[in-house]
Length: 212
Image (cartoon, rainbow, N blue to C red; front, top):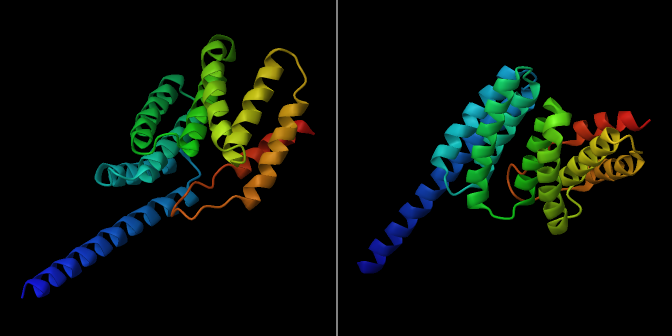
């Protein structure tokens, strides 16, 4: 009798877990579909709302909080209103903090944080560069020390190096070489983790146009 009860409990736990995983996968796929189709600030914000809801439930998974941060970052990057841009980048960083609390020393989280710093610099390089270039450089260097072959980290590092070189009137060819390496890595980079980040190649290709 006891064995039967234990077996029944085990089956119920397995079924419940499977159902929960299926619901998570379904919700994440909806968000990823929205992200794939996103072209406007509003569509990125819509995707962010989906990922935010998932993150509020799946508090032990870094991926939903990460994508909530990424979509808010894209919304901020596409917004011309500086006040709104900063507001949404702040919100993105709040989600990154949640993701980082779940998965410490995560290279993808570091790369996205570096990207956010770069967007902040672009608002006003003269006044913001001294603060945020240092922050971006530090976190991207840390990420590269952990995974030097991550294409998003490499691309963001190239952007930072190029921008710094341009600001000081220096040659940016080394940054262009780094970005070219990142482009090659995008095609070979893969992960077994469901919904693992893959973004960045189009950014790198667009950036490479400056190097011609």
